[in-house]
Length: 249
Ligand SMILES: Nc1nc2c(ncn2[C@@H]2O[C@H](COP(=O)(O)OP(=O)(O)OP(=O)(O)O)[C@@H](O)[C@H]2O)c(=O)[nH]1
Image 1 (tube, rainbow, N blue to C red):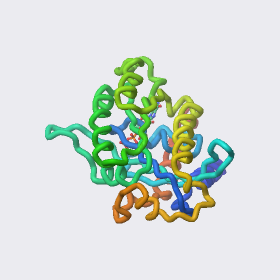
Image 2 (cartoon, rainbow, N blue to C red):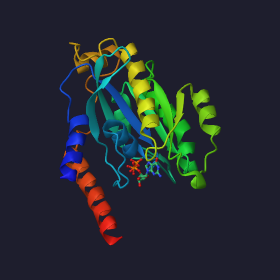
Image 3 (cartoon, helix red, strand yellow):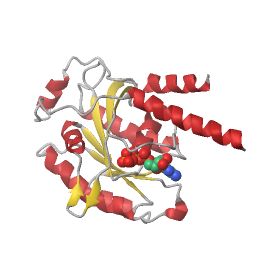
């Protein structure tokens, strides 16, 4: 029963393929395991699910009320983690594609993972290069702020990096604080809604029209489709793990 209620909450907030035009498209990019999926799911469903598999990149849609009470349709693209290998940055095609597709980018690192912080500069360059003359707005999220004893990136370093890159900065904890996560994404949505007068639900602008307006090819392949079955399966796994824990106490 509880599972059904929880799953319907996800379905309510993160529906596959919002049919509305004028979507604000947000790509979430960062190193592996920094909490990208946790942040997206937290923002969309208010819930933190601690147990995720490595993700291949899911697309979620919902509507958000922005300043002034207007409803806008947004799409949030979760992406696979970027890694640093012996040959340099290993950037899945899906990440490049998502950056080209996005109207705005959320760069994420974990305060417990120095390496993920060091990647941010290169990821920002990637965004800037992909955007060309139309660099999309970027925000920087430092996640896992709750893990004080595991911190590897000083609290001052995030704001300094964000200032150098010219983007907003938020230190958040997907596991502990919904309002921080919501605040960061919501402010970005409000900013984007102001930038894109065609974004509200009432808009008649087509997605490809928006791409043309941005000076990007409407033929850019779309990132992977939403995978609600996968999300539900993970959600079920997480709940059954919790039930097992409770039973064993
Ligand atoms: N303590 C704590 N753990 C977190 C937080 N956010 C995510 N995690 C945990 O970090 C691990 C990785 O989270 P994911 O959301 O799967 O990270 P990801 O960036 O999507 O990972 P990849 O898909 O592999 O790139 C999971 O075990 C989460 O439970 C947080 O704010 N605090």
